[in-house]
Amino acid sequence: MTVFVSAVLVHVADVEAGLSWYQRAFPSAERRRLEAFDFEYLKIGSTHLEIVPADEKVASGAAGTVVYWQVEDFDRALAHFNDLGAPLYRGPLAIEDGLWMCQVRDPWGNCIGLRGPRSGAKGL
Image (spheres, helix red, strand yellow):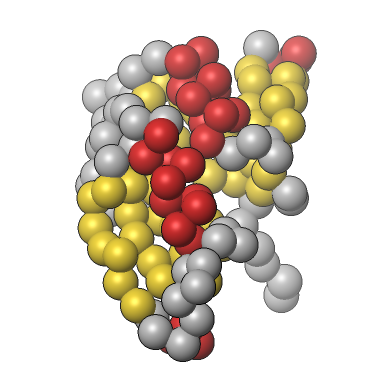
């Protein structure tokens, strides 16, 4: 059986604002629309990033699972997210193979995980 992550749902109070923010956060994201469902989402590689309304069943915020995005340059990615108003929530932490990881929070309190090599910090 072959499995892979096909979609990540991010719950926010304002879907249009969420789509716009996440498109700036992930510049390579392609905005797509499913006319039949009146639904827009972002496609990053083969993964769908689906920005959906928070509700009484699933609120926004830090409450469980965190998706970690592999980045080419950890320091540059962290600075990019900080510039977008996503403050550091946990980390940075050195992990295996010279990689670093951390979590930042989007404007709705959701955690975004980043992991990758630090510029100039290989081997730390």
